[in-house]
Length: 634
Image (spheres, rainbow, N blue to C red):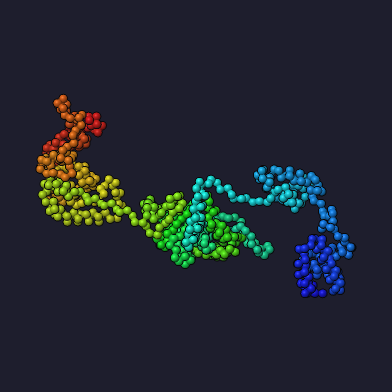
């Protein structure tokens, strides 16, 4: 007899149609009837017929044999029942009433769960419970234990990551804003991407979670410890998930996970896929975590996005998820989880293996992934200066009115900056002409022309000698413009011929006295060749009042100086009672304020000149004066 003939196929089709309509006993009796009929029709033994029927029905031969035997013995119908009353083996807890209380007592110490909720669980395994029950004298197997646990409200559960820690007060509002921005961009046909960096992966024969189908006894052999291998290196996948297209793009880096690497991954995505998928796009929305290389506090992230926006011409909008909510970023559960599934139970031996595994990731929902290898070097610790950040904040970044640190736009072209403030014109030419006339220089332009060539040549020599040297820090008190050449010549001539102090010249010209003194010392030798030498017997001019009096005596008006001295306070007036009280100490104190202590050579001349100089004669009254002593005299 052919057990696989057409008759078996006919029986199998009939059995498949009939089985859902009968219970266990009716099914068993029907198969027994078919076996008896088949044996009579084919003239074969009952055992052979039972084998054919069992094969066609997909049941065991014992079931068919039992049904045929019950029919041969004249089985009676059992209304409303499939089994005889009392049939089957008794439950373990029915055979031993003390089993369930003993089981509950054993689980009491290891039970976890909310006492108010009916669902609880235990940290003991079924086999551990079985051994403990045997030690207590109960012969109960693990299947019966599992059944009783379910009946008592126990379940087999793992840990649930639902505790989010401290939540930001604007968490829900930011979620709603991100959803609204995504809907707006998608409705306009503009690209929306979710970005993040996957954790670093060690290359080499290292263990990975999961199981895969392999021949029995032939598992993939990996290292027994996960000590890092510096020679093999690590990889850092940075993913870009296109939300509307359901497409993933992963840049597999071999260097540091920096903002420059993250933005370059976006650049590669736009070159490979984004520009062709969205040919007319003028803007791009990026959703990212709050921390890491694409964090909202990262200066380099904004600096590199500005460069990408300028390169692509895209207006890049960025929305960061609130701190502690990175798992809501779509790339986590739309792309990275599937890459982990593709990598399961497979060691990443080389960088090519990692890239190939990512590129092979697909889902039934239509996800496809492109993977590229980025072996460029991205140094860690790159700092963005405050000046650069101020430029970005003022002209490139557009902060949103609500939570601008999380929501901002990077413009492709900087906005026009404010108009620069006009530079000051320098000293008043009328002032320079009046000072030159006061110093006895009738033709200032002729003097300038006479020393200009040698001054420029001397400047070139100084610049040549200064090349290659460390530049000195600029003086914070310097002038906002360069001291003009005519101002330098005028200041030096006034210092030479009028004995005018550099402090007074700085007040007149609006420059720092060190700036004026340095330039004057350089040009004085040239003026000396033109006859501009110190005039003997000249009184030192150190105040505006002294300059006013000297100019009035010469019949010259100095522009910008009041015609009269400010009125003295009442306590400083020279009354008849106090005019004769001035002694040598008071005169010496005034000289100390004008010339400083021990300034015995204020005019810079020799002995004869010092004898004619009032300042040198006055300073001699305090041969050993100190600043403290002078303060006491005042």
